[in-house]
Image 1: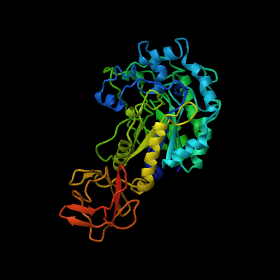
Image 2: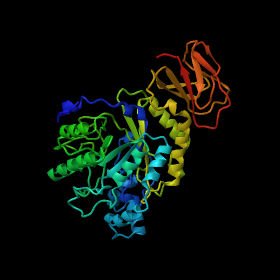
Image 3: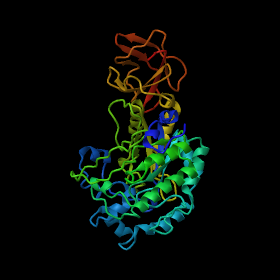
Image 4: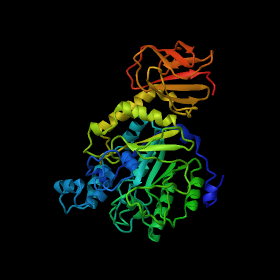
Length: 463
């Protein structure tokens, strides 16, 4: 269909099947902040969001990609570290030559091959983060900073490499914050939306950027961040996108607010944009199956941009990552798992190791994840106390055990199967012995491989 340039028209768009099926995307935060690559240990922002108090978050920001803003606090650990390592007179923009020099060593095919090895189905790249530096040489240059972009067309080269591996390519753009246009420091949660650039100049600039990205790269997702100028005609922009990319998807962060500052002052309240295909909780998940499609975006650690200050203790353990992913999928979500490359595009070993661990698990158990849908309930347990997650596809029910049971026989509480049902352990040939024991389903397991989770496939179980 052809969409008209109105919000009413674009709201007829439905989430395409590919996005429901995809389940796993890779987020890439990469820019000038990847040169210093430092932030203090500030903990999990999801817990800060839940507490509602962001009064100290921005001074102690553990997001390395916010380096420029955190640098503006004279008493911040980031400012202290910067002065010690670069000197007080070294400006953030002075990182640009070093970043462009490092990019000469980047191998986009190697990066895309790693993401394919993980079994990711789509990749989201930050084309412009809040600092305003772009990862493509735009025909619409920044009017306030000369040559404020990469010399290589990072967006174009990675798009080609990702699609060459059979994955979808999606693009992130900071549509609300641009510190090349508004240098005001973000002090608290309310300031995030209070510093959105609202000038006519930026409206024209950001819309032109989005249209250029659409025309050049045909992104499978418009992944906007931190709102959008209130004067922008989003109905027109969204129609332009859907008419160019009919199977495209738009996230929920095109929020337009004319009165951004809230009396509460501390709490970050983020309403959804006027139209979206899915929602994007950050470092957060849900307890129940959601009717609306959603995507959890988070880093492997506490930062999106590469943070050299993070060690293994700040990163998700392999079992935590796998269990979280299975839980998200069981509740109608996707996981957009972030990697923070070093300036030259190489993925730090402790991030790559976790990616490969997830990829190996999916090689064996991917049938319980990809192209599935939520079942009537997401969570369950064995009578022995082992947590389970459910997904379904066609006439199959998948039961993923979040751990290795100590017993050779498990009893899945409250699950019934018809007499003709068969049960397999994914990655192993042959049917398993099972029996109905009242309200519980008892399954005899073989010797299980060393794994953080195991998936059972039950066929002919109906709805």
